Amino acid sequence: MILEIPGDGRLPVACSLDAAEGGRRNEEWRRLDADYALERELRDGQLVVRYVDHPDAVRRLTELVDAERRCCAFVDWSVDRSNAGLRLVVRGDEFALTTLPV
Image 1 (tube, helix red, strand yellow):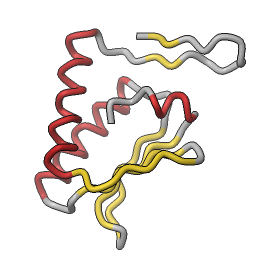
Image 2 (image 1 turned 180 degrees about the vertical axis):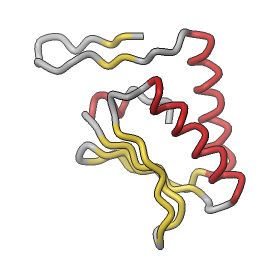
Image 3 (image 1 turned 30 degrees about the vertical axis):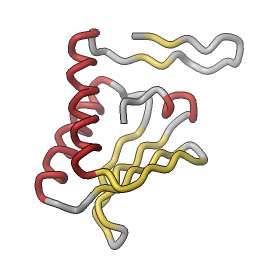
């Protein structure tokens, strides 16, 4: 999938998944978020989603982030476990961040 951004000089956002794989991945994110997501914030080129710090959430989030790094390398993916709890932090162009299934 390629989403073109006409006229602003930025590169297109591209995901290497086909429609079936993309649908399955989106469903995995929806299930993870339904089970464990607490809050989501998109600001200043950064998407932060805070999750319940539970072993199952850590495992599923880590697996999804590893998979996303392979197909959506146009943003920087990281999982942070600190005093703030379990967080997904994705950095990149604000338009690219709004296209993510997270």
